[in-house]
Length: 86
Image (cartoon, rainbow, N blue to C red; front, side, top):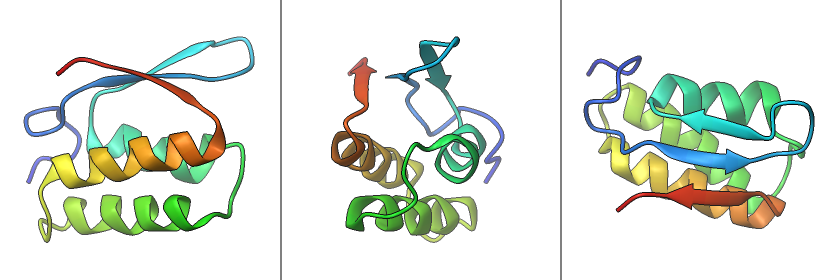
């Protein structure tokens, strides 16, 4: 899998606080980076599931869309608004 490209990952936008209000997440790499380096909280059940899901998708063990869904659930848990396109 090319985890640094958006081929199997439908892009989404996270509405975050700070100078960069909207953060585009278009690849598994960007999802993993958001979760590990820019997430406002580092605990929570959905957060931990999303971390695992990104790792599993990067290794080709689950579809990228499952990791995307886990990211959306983690964002909801953290109070981060998500703008999606279906």
